[in-house]
Length: 47
Image 1 (tube, rainbow, N blue to C red):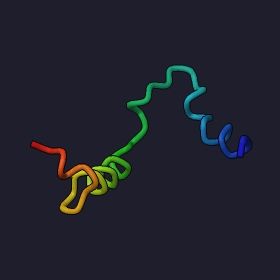
Image 2 (cartoon, rainbow, N blue to C red):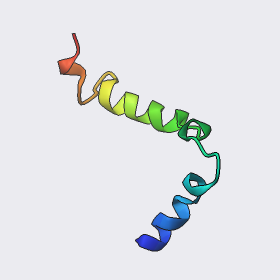
Image 3 (tube, rainbow, N blue to C red):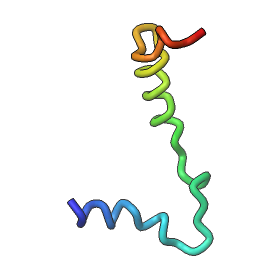
Image 4 (cartoon, rainbow, N blue to C red):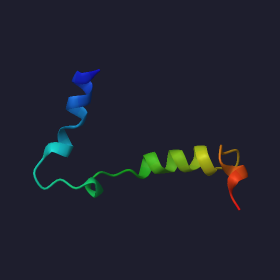
């Protein structure tokens, strides 16, 4: 587990790194669909 974790975290250790440099579009799209899509888990909580 830790071996994969540390290699996945390597971009975060670079000098001058900022989280905005990572494209999260696909991740955001997936979770918007899961949570707020037509059958989303949180649809009933929206006003």
